[in-house]
Length: 192
Image (cartoon, rainbow, N blue to C red; front, side, top):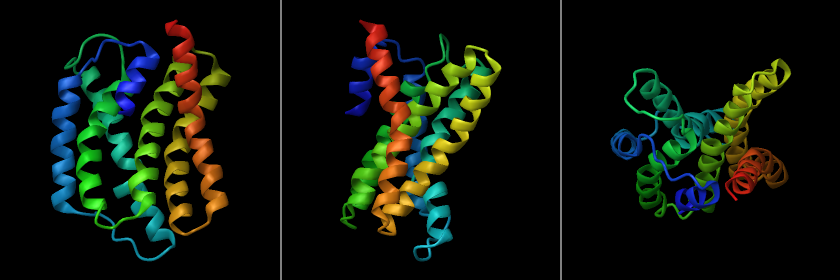
C-alpha cells in the first residue's frame, strides 16, 4: 500500500525496472524464507542488533538499492534513476512472506515497525542520493553521512523497541522516518 501512496504523492508514473524489482524481490524473499536467519539473535544485546542489521531491517531494505545500481550500471533498466519505486516494489514480496511467517510470533515490532523502517530506508536514501547529485561539497558530505546513518539508526530503532527501550526507539524511529516524510512532502509539492 505504501508503494501506491508513494507513486500518488510523487506523481511518478514511470516504474523503471518494475518487472526486475518484483522478480528479483520474489526470488530473494523465497531464499530468505527457506534459509532463515543468517545471524542467530541471542538476547537483547549486540547479536540482536546485528541480526536486525542483516536479517530483519537493514540488509533487506538496502539490497534493492544496491541491485538497482547494478542494473543501471549494466543498462538492464533504462530511464532516470528511480531508486525509491524500485526498492518499494522489491519489498512487496518480502513483506508478504515475512508477514505470513511473523504473524505466528504475534510481535507488533516485526509486523508494524519493520515494514515502516524498510519504507523509510527505501525512500530516505534516494532522497540523499538526489542531494548528492546537486554537487555542493558540504551537502555531499552530509548526504553521504546520512546514507550511512539511516540504515544503522533503523536497526538500532528495531533493537531499542525489541529491548523495550521505548524512548530511544521512538527517537531513532523519528530520525529514520524524517527524510522519508520530508521527501514525500517535497515530492508532493513538486508534483502539483
